[in-house]
Length: 244
Image 1 (cartoon, helix red, strand yellow):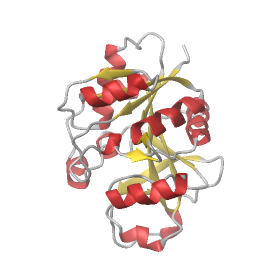
Image 2 (cartoon, helix red, strand yellow):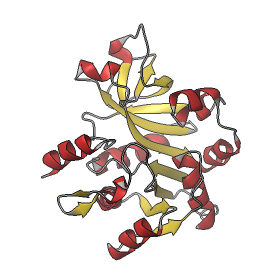
Image 3 (cartoon, one colour):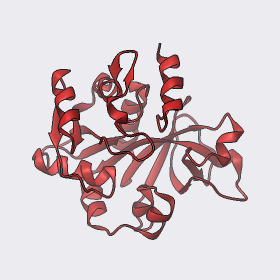
Image 4 (tube, one colour):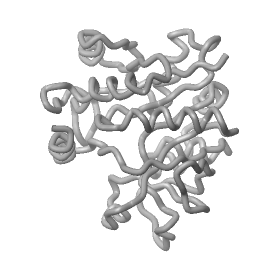
């Protein structure tokens, strides 16, 4: 059994940008851009997991697959797990991707690269990062960073040291812009959702800290450019320009 599924968790109730998944970029809802990028990777079944009927209907109208989940999940990965269980993937999917729904211009090759890295390495969770070009990102709370023990090169897949939004006394050469995609083994995802929310997960508002604080191994691969994450309406304008 070596099959992959990509599950995109998304909801309308984001505090900073309500109704974000349905915000249009060049006339197309953002969630549909993310869905299309996932499908273009051609690594497996793609599914949107949402508690909102409005998103469910938009995905269906655009030819995608969606599943309704309960509204009160503490993280996107918990929502992904509910969809994984409801779709009865346990017997035929061993690798589950959580692709965050605010990455409309993610390169589909990045997604397929992460699958190759996961298939060729031994770890619980894999993710991606890109070099920090703009030094202002180091102090930007909206930009999630990952700190490494080694400098990442193209085909490396090394264990993450830490994830954070802001930190003092950094080695900038070994700090990267984290990209919102996680590849879980089926065993790791099942373990993850059974853990209580961790101290640093709550403090930093970063779901990956639950895995880190419970000794799940997260490895990081390198991308040569970063997709623009849409957290605010200003971000939406910037990504619309880039994708035009």
